[in-house]
Length: 167
Image (tube, rainbow, N blue to C red):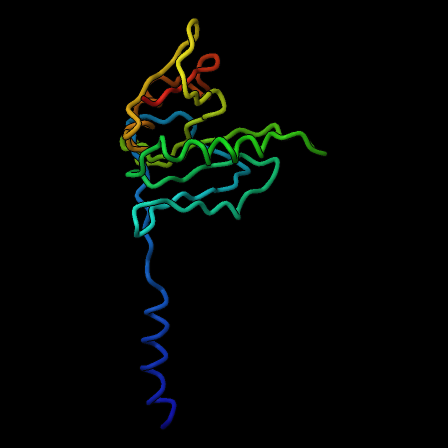
């Protein structure tokens, strides 16, 4: 009889603790890379205060790193932390890391997950002459940034190193 009285309370606590946290990822209309074998996800989510939180606990060396970013976050605010993690990935160490780094997005035409390689991007604070520079408003959302980058990307990589500048 006691179990019958306690069961509703336990089930309510259990259901309350299983709150769903959904992340809206970016969407674009074509796929660059559609399959990765060994990957480590890095989640960047929006906090209740409007800032962002990075869950980098899943990083594994010598795997492809995939940044899953909340689509509404302004990419320019995330760049310093993304760059810090990329630098950490390729820092000199015992074992060289030859795997790539990607942004995750959804191909809205094929309705599948796709990956944008970002190894060839160089995020800069000033424009330099003589190199291809893509300029974006500093308030551009991650989704709009990924859509623009997907449009200039062909196959599995960008053309030679491209500088990205936020004004």
